[in-house]
Image (cartoon, rainbow, N blue to C red):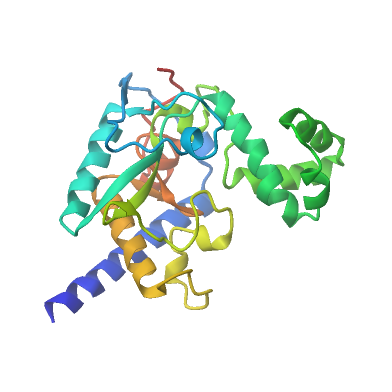
Length: 267
């Protein structure tokens, strides 16, 4: 009976997070949230917590050092403690991101995912370099560029150093995490950086949805545990991506109805 009480409470908490998060993004624009940067420093993510995905797996950067704002890292560690009480843990896949990497990711995922949604997959797949991808994109009709740019921006923000509207990851206040179970990456239904509906933070709450790969019930439980641990540690969710969380940046401020305290920063 006690177990089911906790299951119900977790479900209610998650539904509340779902409502608050989705309502905030539907009714506001995070880029318009004012920022008063508190000058908090970037700190290196400890090696035992870090798995620099874009360096080790995708080979898009050579530098494996990962950074977060000091309080963001403290809160990630707090979430890790909560999960260890459940026999789980966290790995940080990405934190602070340079605008150069941000731009690389924007065009990488334009080619890998977004082009397919606009019947452009075959044409984009023939392009070997990001220079060619950008040149071809610029040759498309302006209205096509606009809708493709907006669709891609849902998952990869446009690279920006603008102190009034920086890319979330360039603030040190956005973090991508993954759940660890028995010392290895847990199955969470889709791969990291999957740009489809099943990657949504609240997708597993839908009544009509696809079964997630693997043990669907366990995947749903694990997603819930990770999201609630991060939320309990002060983070806000990002609806399209269950692994992406924010603290102190404009996205976080939008959900919490406050001023942002992190702007663009460099190590």
